[in-house]
Length: 320
Image (cartoon, rainbow, N blue to C red; front, side):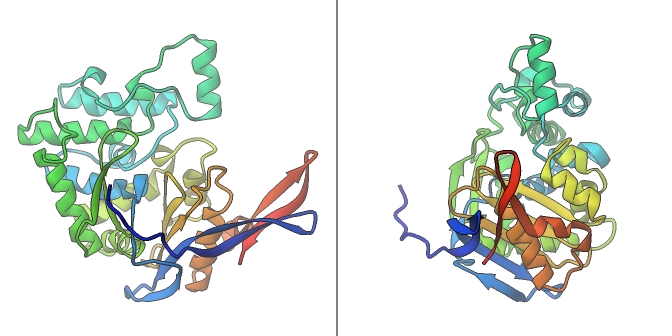
């Protein structure tokens, strides 16, 4: 185990119920100007952290660099964390089929749909868990397509020393502008690379501001154009990108979120308690975008989160 000091997370949001503070969410948040300067920062934004699924755009870039023929919806789902809806499964299967592979080649765990409606249909129809339902199956399908394009082995594509995973490492360091601090295993079994919160924000910003038609820029463009493939019906990433055209939003597990405006102004958030109820990271991120001067009026209601009691609103989670 790597011994690191406890991070100096700071209070970012408070939970107020019926006029009394009930709790506080601690974490860190950074905001980059369109020129790449740190214009907003709270907490240990330079400390290593795991971006989790917020790092998927870098993994998708590695797929393109390896020669995977991904575009539009296939590129969006390769950089996404889908809900296991039927159209998600169809897209992941198409990526695999085009590469001459099947769901049996996936090395992510078997799972059930994450979306409420999709899960209800899954249970009603008596389906069985499958790696295709796992929220990262689009990413894994894209990884496999990249391996086929290069003639690399597909059985061990999750090994950190596999040529594809080394390419992911190179793409991540290239975009984030820093060395990987630590390598772990993500929930889907893929290598997870630690960078700083600044590095995460800089990485997505670098891709957004890359030349028109470049592989780097094509990833966030596909995400913004096809938000339902990045997340799914009734998911926060999808909602934010639909309501604020041009925005790129990518949530990561354990309290992470990265948001990037069309002109490149980008924020990255880490909530230290994991934000399991998704009630803090979005409002902290949108608040940071607003502090950078981004017009967040289309999603201004996301500057707070309602607290319910007896089925009625009795308080809110709000920025500190």
